Image (cartoon, rainbow, N blue to C red):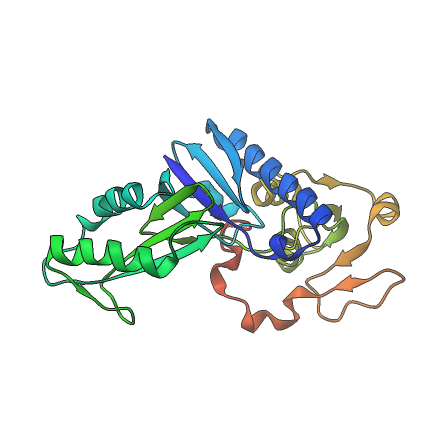
Length: 268
């Protein structure tokens, strides 16, 4: 199975930063695959990552990924695209509505509209279906990138954010579950976490292990963590100001989707 992986914020960075962040993302995916015992290969193809492996559900847990799709890969010529797209069209029933979503990057002797019209006509006549671009029952996506084309019909959302360890060290003094929840939001933003055991929570090491999974982290004494950290993350909205930045990600908690903690603190 091939999976097309998309990222958003990384693509906005300067070339050198983008290359570094892409490497961190690939390293984090490899670490996740080792953690779950998944074998596979990762390739970079023109601003996308393509993973060849037996499963892809673990990608929902990797920071920096905005979405991913199981895909069929073919050459970027009209006949190849038509043939592969028709395999997806078999899922479209008679008189059912459908839409083609075509995106093209690179130089080709056809446009996105050309592909949409040619393939759309093929599907319409073969399946006796109707085109509805606004509210279709089925969608087929065709992403043409240079000499390779990716065809798919499903898009799964990822964590978003930035790759782990792309934003430096942040200290978390663990006094309760809210501190862990706040730390998880900083993990999503690419920060490496240094935990310091506080007074209000027994055995935070076990929760940190479950939350961080394959990600590198450490527990440290407060003085040592202070030397390494670029900031502090806290769940307490009334935490006092300090000499280094203090992050309060739960201050707007009512606006945070409930499932944002799903793959970190197990929904707590």
